[in-house]
Length: 408
Image 1 (spheres, one colour):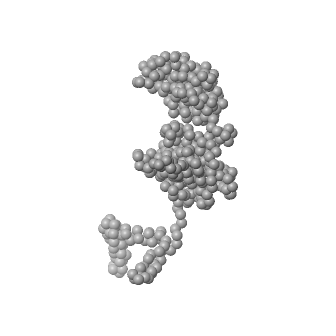
Image 2: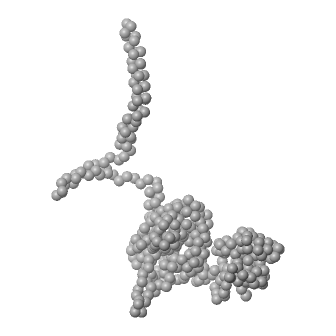
Image 3: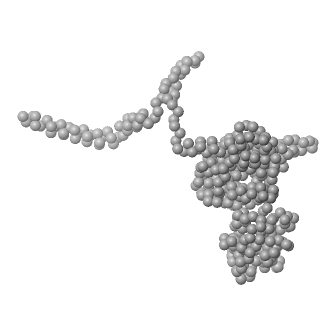
């Protein structure tokens, strides 16, 4: 009877000793982990088949996947962007004639990208892609080729509008807004890098900054990205995660090497929209202008000449008959020198436009880009120590071409 009563007690003791041994010796050494991981892997990975391949070198046993795995969420988004945008992206080949050593004509070809704007066949690209070209050819995503006509160019913004005729079933790109872009936002670039058509790369917006374009022209609010872009991507679309165009890929920072270094730039699509609107309405670009020559002011210069603010743009000269002169703005009257460069002092100091602070030329250019010729703006200026708000109707810059100086 005593033995029968002790059996349950002994069984409990043995179970406790075994549990103690497992938890203090086996589990702590990790001896069981490989078996658990192996079991988990077997449960999560798809089954594989073994196939034998016979040949002169013998028999090879290959392990083949049982079925193609499903795409994850990120892959699905990449594929969706590519499928949506690719039919709108084109390759552009430009042919220019150069002269060889013996003054014989030699065709030279350049390549770039672009995207379709409408079903009529209008295509947007960079001006530097087709600059000085005698012939421009567009290849669609379906490999059909068309001769293109240059409808208009805007060298200041490095944009060009092309037209192809009799191209059926064109799929226009969807244009988004670029005003509220955020650093860290995912972006995609599709284009023709090194002549490799239909190439997509992915990255993020690295910064929004003002830069100088291919012709040293200012590009305000340029989109900097680490998406890999290379020669041939120029003119192609920079897309958001919905496959909508937010910018036009324009140039790369390559440190002397003509390939991607992880820093590319795109013209914001809102700038392109304004250019397209001018082409549509006037057949040319009507760049808004104040018709002034200015000197950028910093704290040191402001202190030296006794200005009322330590930032802004000092008006050196107003162009005769221009927007600033008509509004009553004053240019400089006192000649001085900044280093070896002559400057005119005594003019109005611009510190704001339409309530936005103007600290330098980039601020003014960015504000002007949101306007068109004929718009009325309010400039905030200092005339001596007196602060004034002056209404100015912006002029068409093309009407003042040929005037010398640093005009804005």
